[in-house]
Length: 450
Image (cartoon, rainbow, N blue to C red):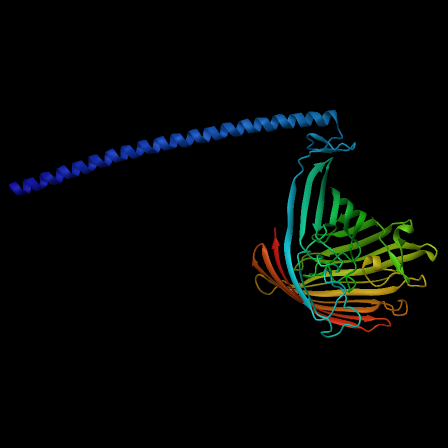
């Protein structure tokens, strides 16, 4: 009995000690939790106090700016200090939001016969056929940097802008052509949007031939091979009419710089566009069609008209073109895109020919069609055919009579910002009174979007 009593007593004592220790530990943890909670609350209060002080500062700055606007209604929406340039001009530090974007693009390309430019190939060179003069080059010229500016609210409208630059050098002469590149303006414009109206002032894409093929040859872009639209300074007005759900009607018109430039036999060059004394006028009407499952359809017609002037040869030579375009998703993984246009004296539109030696306009037809396939995740495939066909009877000797391009490309998104691409292009170019030319070209790219 004494042994049992001893065991029971020891068990009760041990249990008492465990309970006491647990209570003591719980009290200690409870004290630690309270201390930690108090510390966190103090930090939170300090953070809130700092935020209130910062908000008071911002509120005071806004009140100062509002007072400045009331006293000077022409000031910028977010006008700040005025910077003097010393030339009578002033710049206002506006605080307008700017978003930087663009891509770094490294290219390597090889062709088995000479083409017109290794910077922006568009045609095969005359007399070069089948391994007659192969070429290889690598370049970063096709990289770009861009900035979207705004938009900001201004007088019941929104004001914004866009800047896009690349590093292009068209000339193939010189050993440093591909390493000493020139910074070039692609797009540079501001636009004001009010309800369904948009007014754009600056340099951007033509209204005519508004679509572009998907190609690694971004500076060749199938120009003079079916694609006619380029970029030029202009005043552009757009009206968007939502007459049906997901099917907007878009009306667009522009007044453009006349960039026509004509070189006559003998090497005499005229600034024939500026000498005409008139701009180039362009207009388009586009109908969007939604609700087709595979995606919205874009279809439209567009045209342009201007004049050129050859002093001492012939004045007021018309330049005009009219065409249609279509982008149609057939399936979720298949989209067809294409353009076709016809006109006269259209080299400033990047198609056909301009003015011949007799001072007459060269009639031309061009177009392109592309199928884009995305059947696999992270893969995109493109197949494209393009043609540019000046009227044989209008062109001078040694000029292009026809240019055909056939291409296929594949792009693989390695991960979100990095893409690898491969492209094959076949050039077949006919010349008047010169041997024809053809060339096969292989192109690889690594593109880092940012």
